[in-house]
Image (cartoon, rainbow, N blue to C red):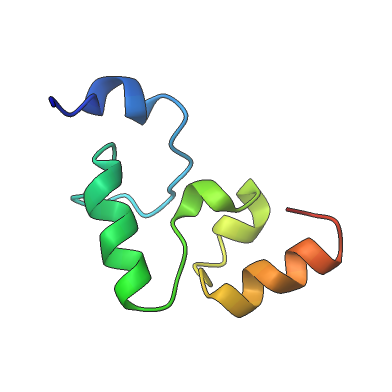
Length: 67
């Protein structure tokens, strides 16, 4: 299976500019899960920009009906 990096970049809301994993979703997800985090695409833009990608932050957003 070929990576669809160019297509993945269009909806990617990761604001961390030097990220080498942008558009390579399988690497991004693997990287974040190892740190008990979720990738940027799971968060609304304003929450993503905090760089707090923790499960706990995501759970708070869900409880507040923001994710």
